[in-house]
Image (cartoon, rainbow, N blue to C red; front, side, top):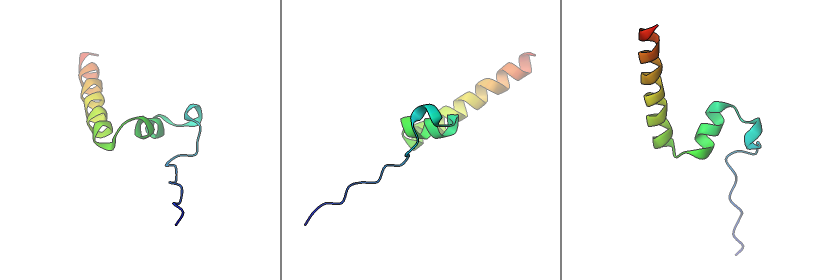
Length: 50
């Protein structure tokens, strides 16, 4: 039996991806979730300073 090739998650070239798509393309979903949470906390802190 011949193995079927695995489908790629994204057919877009990375330079054409949105930030969200690139985040999921590069990082594992759990890491992406934690990274987004960390960025949100950082953004809230900078808004409070202004």
